[in-house]
Picture 1: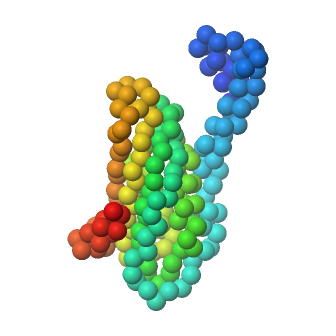
Picture 2: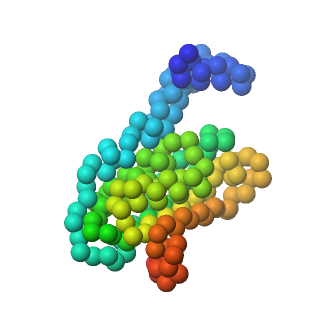
Picture 3: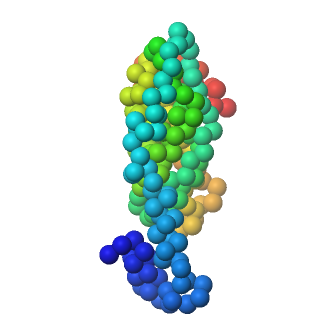
Length: 181
């Protein structure tokens, strides 16, 4: 049974008529949308970074702020939407700027919980750059908490992962966190 057939069955189980005018093409559209929203499963770290590493003598912090992200909570299949801040301390190489955002997107476009997403991004940047340290902070709003359950509209979740010098060195960590304001 393909994804489109499953959506047809979901509509029927909800008590809808999947053949009525407004829903006739919904199973096909929903299947296509879900495949797009989960396209990260078809990507690899090597593909999204595409060898975009460049030599540098700098070991100063590189920070990419406010990378918007859209993901689906693995518990309810509802969106969470937010932004990621990713920093690293170069160890002879810097990563092409757009590749940081592509790494965020690749992992965000998989069924996720935010805590794991933060770690996956940090570990991927570390793997690609061999940086002295990597830091990731994500702030997101979760539709599973806003649209159902406790229905808290103004809540957000913040997660962080600190690797290498960001974990070991309080001054480095503080510098990173102060740059997020």
